[in-house]
Structures are given as C-alpha cells and as structure tokens.
Image (cartoon, rainbow, N blue to C red; front, side, top):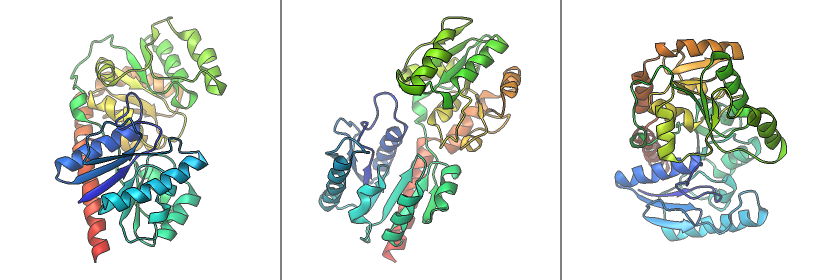
Length: 346
C-alpha cells in the first residue's frame, strides 16, 4: 500500500526530546516500510524520519488561522502528488477538509481529547470514508459519543531503546519523569518520598510563567536539594533508559484524565513498576498489583512503597512486549488499513 502519514507541524518527526505523538508516527512509518509499504510523511521541515517521500508543512502553528489554511491546501496538493491508497492523520482533522468528500480511505487518530464539534462534522462529511482511532479505550469512549467509527490502538514504545533491569538496589530511588506541573502530581511524589524516607529523582521540563510557573517556584523548588529530592532537568532517550532502569518505581500520581501517557509504558519496558492514579487510560496500562499500583489518595500511595518488592519486574517488561511494543501496534494499524481498504473497494 501507499500510505500518507501526517503529524502536527510544531515538532519534528522523530522529536529531539519530548513529543509522544511524533515518536509514534516515526515508529509507525518505520514499521510500515519494513512490512513492504511505501510511506509518505507530512510533518515539520526538520523531520528526519526515513520515509519513501517527505513533505514539509508550510504553516508551523496548528492554532493559527492562516497556517491552517496553508496546511489544508498543502495536504490536498500532496495527496495529488503522492497518490496514496490511504491517508492517516495524526494532525488536525481540519486539514482533511478538502478530502472528506472523496472516496479515498482516511484515518484520523486522537492522542488527545476529541472535540464533539470537529469529530461529529468530520464523520458526517466523510460519509463512511473516515475511520477514527484513539490511543486508549478511554479516548474512544469519549469519541464514540460524537459519532463515527472508532478503534482503540494504544501507543507504543521501541523496546530496543529500553534495557530490562531485573533487579535494583534496596535503596534505589523513586523517579518522577514527566512535565513538572500540577496535573502530573510532582508535589504528591515529593510528599510520598518525604513520608517514606525514599530518594526521589525528578526529570522533565517545567513552565517559568503563569500558574504552572508559580507552581514550580512555590511547590517544587523549595524541596529541591533537600531530604533526597533531586531535579536533573530534561532527559534524552539514553538518559531516560538509564534513569528508569535504576528506579525502584516511577511515581507520577496524575490529577487528570490521562489519554495514555507513553512514559508509563517506557517505565514498564525497563521492568520498573508504576505508581500512579486510577484515572484516564492508566487502568489500561497498569495491572493492579502486577505492573504497579494505581492509587486514589496520598495515604494509598505511601502504602504502596512498602509493597514494591512484591512486583515481579519480568511481568512489567512482558506487559509491554505483549501489548505496547512497536511491532504489536504497527501490526494493528496495518490490519486496520487492510480492512478499511477492502471495505472501500467492495
């Protein structure tokens, strides 16, 4: 098949540091080509993903009206040039507008919350030629309420980048790896570390302005460099692998409905248990008492620290191999493409 993938224009594919969607697009492009497909990619001009043909976006801001018009016309012209059998968008559904009325099969993937207005009109205009995917059952449940055909295909990790560590030291630290903001629960991770006397390493970016900048300055900074709490900044893939592998657990006690959260699968790939909250897609990733613990309060989070020796780190790695590896997810997308194409032909 000739498959055209598109990603948001803000970040290159693959991303240099953070960028979960862009990382998924790169893994999908690579895996599809290994399986014999021709892959075109529309993405940020600095993208380095090895594809059959690359097309840079003209507009670089998803929320800018003029850039949106540019990218909508750009995608239409690219389709005329590349002549794909199927278009798969990880970018904005609005970019698909000129294509919705055509018989060309289209897939629209959501790694974020689907909005009722855009998904409902997209499904109506496409008249059966547009299929939606969500990165979790949680996202698909929200999407189905707006209409259209939805399939859950989880996000994935490249297993080769994460070394399985079967055992860590008794005094191994806890790790918080995510954007340092209130909804990710960094303050709770710090409180748990204090209460249990455990070291905590915090990695991730943070905001210097607004409410999140205030959160960083008032609730995080005063704890750094004290009582075993350390901040190491942002980390690349190699540093992430080392950081997660040495951890007793990754603790990211979220305070929002997480659409998926690739970092949770990355931790499990290293054999590292996850401590988080039972919200959003987390129950689809972490099996309670097997891959880690999903808690509903600070007190429960504290209690789980004593239970960490009960987790078999082999089970954590196996969970990712069976459910969230790149090979598994690429195969699911490939099967979806084939099913859609057969249906469109018939």
